[in-house]
Amino acid sequence: MADVVFQPLSFRNLTVKNRVFRSNISGRFDNYDGSGTQTRINWELKFARGGVGAIISSFVPVHPRGRIIPNYASIVSDDRIPFWRALGAAVHQHDCKYIMQLSHGGRQRDIPDLEHPRGQSSTDKRDPLHGFECDRMTIADIKEVVAAFAEGARRAREAGLDGVELHGANGYLITQFLSSAINDRKDEYGGSLENRARFVLDIVRAIRARVGKDFHLQMKISATEFNNALLILRLEGAGNTVQESAQVCKWLVEAGVDAIHVSTGSSFPHPRNPAGADIDVSLLSHTYEQLASSGTNTFRNLLFFHNHLTAELFRKQWVDAGVTKDKIEGLSLADARVVKQAVPVPVICTGGFQTASVIRKAITAGDCDAVSMARPLVANNDLVKQFAAGKDRADRPCTYCNKCLVHVVEHPLGCYEEKRFPSPEAMLHEVMSVFQPPPFP
Ligand SMILES: Cc1cc2nc3c(=O)[nH]c(=O)nc-3n(C[C@H](O)[C@H](O)[C@H](O)COP(=O)(O)O)c2cc1C
Ligand code: SF4
Image (cartoon, rainbow, N blue to C red; front, side, top):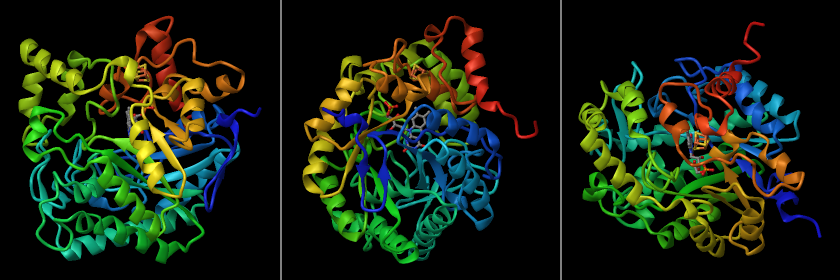
């Protein structure tokens, strides 16, 4: 019998050759102003060559104020289209589809850029983790951002990409509207679930009006928010349940969404996303220095990470709020199942997948139609080819150590787990390989 992992998956407007998607994974590969580089193309080609059916891009800002850190390629203007066209064409040469993640950070950021020191959000409360300040969006602001998402979709289509994904997960702007914990508005965009969903539904309708019905559109959602996972977040409450999110997904599909990508966690990072076996606080105390001058809590956090006792307290809280290592693979499958039962469109599930038999079982059981992977593919770019050759798991799998995550605010994105490599030099050689070929050979 044919292996379900390698059966094509058909959406309304798109067919993908297998059931493994590269999940969104952001790295600082581009220019300060958000124009793209050869380095990002090199990065994406690693996964296209490795056999995934589709790549879902990293966080791509649709609006200049929606940026979360400098050096992420954006889609804020038409002059960005040629870069994305070149990237899409390169990926397509490997029979791999490319879906752009249309994004806006809102109040949740890493390093604000020079031009936009303040974020904007459904609320005027600072983000509780780093303390980045933000303005409560007016109706005019909402209309402007909705139009920016529609323009982003139109530009992605003109660039010849295969679809777009709304970043409605992990605490960014769309989550800030959807979330019962974060959204404290008194107008038609706050209060009831219906009102909180209005912003994202406006975006879906605006995109459909701009690009028509025949362009793939999916939504990534944090099905269960777990906004009370950390002491620091508890003041805001637990956030949306999977049942509330399933209702939102039904409305999204009615409004024109073609697929749902299930994630978890009301912030990024969150103890459950990307779920880690542990967190290396001494490494964090180095790279977090990058943030120390921006948010109102960041200097306090840095001191916390530098002091041995408080660092250990943080580490313990983070680890306790997550899941044990044996539960990381497929940790959102129960949520995916609830969403799948609520909607008639395909469901993609993210979180820890790296074993062919686990993926096969999840699809066969009807919990999801496909999986997306981020860290396991960073560790083993060719994992899908390994599956095709009959391997159930890579010889040196991702350990979920999250060193890639902790490094990324300062260093090139890549796998930094030394024990996966024969030597530290071999690890750095692999990390730096993203700069080959160079832009000016
Ligand atoms: C360094 C890093 C950057 C990420 N960037 C994004 C992003 O830009 N957009 C997004 O939706 N998810 C992002 N994620 C989350 C992943 O897409 C994925 O959903 C999560 O890591 C769980 O999957 P995994 O266990 O396969 O890594 C990122 C994860 C990591 C580790
Ligand atoms: S550093 Fe490597 S092993 Fe650790 S989580 Fe990231 S990809 Fe996996």
